[in-house]
Image (cartoon, rainbow, N blue to C red; front, side, top):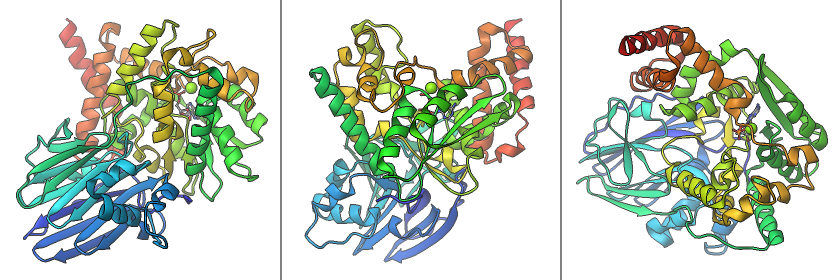
Length: 506
Ligand code: AMP
Ligand code: MG
């Protein structure tokens, strides 16, 4: 069973031939660091582990194979059943090592988890993401060396040839590639040759089920997904009072077996969803807290959001900014945090009209394009020292939700019908039927970011482009150049972008 934090929450690791590589660990994620160096014949292994408590379960070695795993697995019991009787894996890395022994690279097809793996087997380096790439993994490689990290900023300055199969290039970081979701990349450390294996793809086929079977399927999958993520400590669920996060809170109460769970809601002085979140907290008898953040404090964390999520996507940063603030203010001690993030992608929840054709087009498009956005990155909560996990993107939950035919997602005039109906007995009726409100809307983030630029003189027609320019500048500074986000003067960045904007308009 999972405990508060996984054994390791991040890493920077290099395998090299003949010469040892100097590493420059730079993490937005908070945590203790442990350095491991090993010489294996002509090969050097150099690892910097980021962790909360003891990192023991994150690194396993046998013979010429070493496995490093940041994050955690959620189907450990199933995986154990594949191993010889009495095999006592002492952690997730050990379990993966044992599975590699029997299944080779195909071991990664078996895993349901939230992880990034770096493994060395003889002269081969193996890099793997979970099915949805929820723990970003970056790599640079050239003949004689492979370097990988869970934060791209740690690879700035390491040299790589770029253009690796199974990866995408990173903005402003030449030679740095991001592994795609559901991929194992095999690299010959000496020669640099690569091989790509796919371990998961979003389902394209759709299931037709009777209503009750569909709601049972969703409830059972989600229940397992929440239970696998609920640690032995008191879990914390961040709730908006919408159906997604409220469903997670309800199932976390169930999984906590009588322990009182914590819930947390954030809002600004202008916008909040406190009454809706409070209703749910009351209903579930959670220990509930509200955090009020000023709009100015919210915007001041834009550099921290780019620093943590390593993306320049405007929509994503607007979703993640209020959550960054929430995680930074959550608790002094490290917490395991469950969210309702991501339900709308397989369920088409952002799509507010009822035509099934259009709904399916939206779901198919979103499931084909989520990769590389870093929406689910654990670094966001790790800047506050916490570990976040998103049950809606559990592999089995995601497979179930995605594969339901659109008419089960929008039905009887309701969006996300199958989820709302599955959870109807767990939540107050107003919560069950509450319309979607995105976190960027409920916190006023989109409006506040727009106002910041308009006040600096950006014409409304250029807002989106200007936001993107701001994020690119922040990315170059806090990710590519390694500046600390506290050192960035956001007003100055905005003024420079606004100046450029008004020149291009006149
Ligand atoms: P949403 O865009 O509303 O789906 O938000 C994604 C997730 O972020 C939710 O499922 C919640 O777990 C969390 N969240 C959204 N808004 C808030 C809020 N105001 N306070 C706390 N958590 C929130
Ligand atoms: Mg919401």
